[in-house]
Length: 174
Image (cartoon, rainbow, N blue to C red; front, side, top):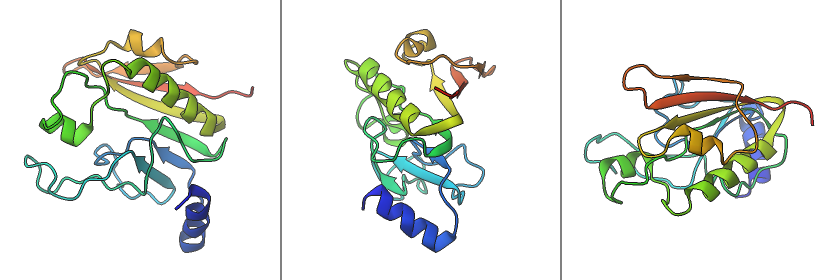
């Protein structure tokens, strides 16, 4: 079902428009409310409960299966976008981390992230915020930021192992 048809159905059913986009929802692990009514959860795949033998209740259940590099969404739609793309390039296809978090192509990751950022920026509304989460396990954040057409306002590196970074981008008037 195309997004516009789904959007009308969602509005009719809930009375609320989707103002938040989770562009790589995966298992929705960092969400307190994993079914927030204002959020559209997308991922490029769906996986049934039990897909990970290490976490029997784990599943990937996006509202819509869609790739962040090619969004079938209207421009200037979302006030808030959260983007936690796959960040592992050195992981086997059947490894636990690949099953639960996905992986990114080691030859194409720069192009994939650049295309993804541009698509998300397109659907982010003016005066909207994009929150980007990255782990430097395989690729340093400096190399990732070189792929983006905008620079973040601020960010935070976790202190436990120092590999996870959260960044905030703000879309000003063009």
